[in-house]
Length: 108
Image (cartoon, rainbow, N blue to C red):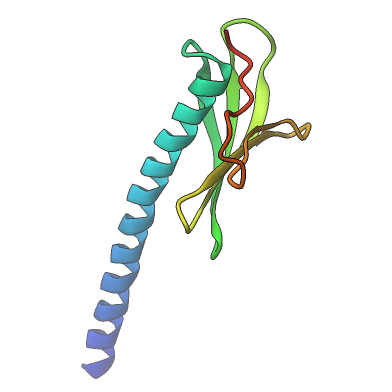
C-alpha cells in the first residue's frame, strides 16, 4: 500500500514537471520566432524540428523559410538567465546574447 502512494506521488511530480517544460517550450518558441522575423522579415515561415532542455538552457532547432531566398536551419538557444542567441548552422550569428547593440538583419 505504501509503495502505491509513493508511485502515485512520483507520477504526479513527473506530470507537473512535464507540463512546466511544455509551457516554457511554447514561450521559448514564440521568442525564437519573433527573433527570426526581426532578422529575416515578417513573411518568414518557420518549422520546429527539435527542442532539447538542458541545465543551462534550452536549444530549439528551427527551419526558417524567408519570403525570398533559400531556407536556413537555425539554432535558437534560450538561456536560464533570460538571454537568447540565434545562429545559422553555417555559423552566421543573428542574435548574440552578450551583444546589446543592433543585431544583424537580413530583411529590409
